Image (cartoon, rainbow, N blue to C red; front, side, top):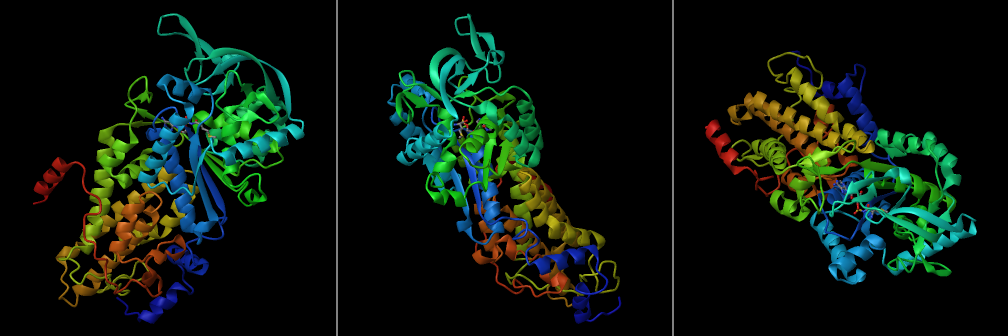
Length: 593
Ligand code: MSP
């Protein structure tokens, strides 16, 4: 090898011959933040989950909606320096015929049912580490105020009129349906009963005088909004679907119900004989949370991202933006849509008795394990199927074996007896690929690893931006596999700290692997916060060094000082993620020995 003094190697990274890798490092160091902070990210952001019906206990589909929002919000917080710049709301949708009927069936007053089930959602979200800043209940006084104010604004702007509504109403879905969306199915007694074509839920004929919103006026403004902002609804097929709906007729929308029929709701201002339609009531929750009608709400609206399931797309992407435009406001910034979880190939439902209880799953698979599973396997564009074996297999292979094994390999006493972050040797691993010589130990695949991990944070940020958290986790998992391959290839357990030839390379191998782990730990924080904390603490990374703006991967390779070199590893030596399938663990161990 040509003996190039260290300073020349350092000089190279900032000078004439710049490889692709170096080019990336330069951009990274000059922007100071891997390109994932400041420039591409507005500091202020407001994330919302749908508010959940309280007619039944939470299931994994509800938790999934909340987890997607939580991961997006946590990732945003990692990108911006101040957590205060983020709001994240969730809550319960407590009014309407559905709840009124569920309470009657349970022999409870509606408020009792609401208190009971709302508490279950709050407990679940606490247990699942959902980092919401606000929990709203639509039965709160602040919400009634907001809804009634919103109503008056629409009324003043001439967008509400009284008319006769005659048609189908589906209490389960809380929506009005045209004849074309209704079919007949045999009911429990064998007679044909009218049901919603889309959801299969029973519908009933309604004829009453209601307040009607001039929705038909908003067809073109909605089309202009969506055509002008192709990312308004993500993933793209849902954006296309909404534009398709807007090609069809858009009739005016009934926005109140007769109070004698629906008493469990907010009275229409100035007309006690009518109750506000529960969807108008529910959608306004997004404004109540940010202080509407007080002017403070304007600093959070419309920098809003709604996370919703595909079944409630029309309410959020047609009715809600139209109502907002009607009230003189802008549509939300983003609507992120996800598909549904089925169980062993079937829709999850109380009547089928196949509802998966998220509490049991959190207990069985741990909070981080179950969060990881849902976000890694859930694909927003299509429905995903749940079964227990899939969870065990995924968590054992990716968290226990691959990630946990990697950490163990780099921190175990016999391989890292000093318990520190060893030094990186630029002679063993020069920043310039392709050099040969007796001291150069790095191979082509090692440069590929460094390149993959260096670009990972940006890749992950792009996946979050496109609402493809599963792809972000897939990319991370692939890098973890590559890092394990790196360790396997150089077998540090065969190198000797006492040997002056081995020692610098042994330190370098461990240093590179620990740096990769530091990147994985940082990037995993939005999905598995507890596990990431354990991992980063074990690496000795302090809480102020865990943001994306601070994530300078392998600085010594790029000719910069590394603050971790020589640092003591954290004291916690426990298993990162325990294997779930212990029988296989034993088999694997027998095989190894
Ligand atoms: N209350 C309305 C939302 C009003 S928002 C202004 C509602 N509530 S819900 O409890 O029925 O659903 C809440 C969320 O859970 C929705 O995003 C819905 O898509 C989601 N899920 C319900 N079942 C689901 C699955 N099986 N799988 C994934 N998500 C599912 O709608």
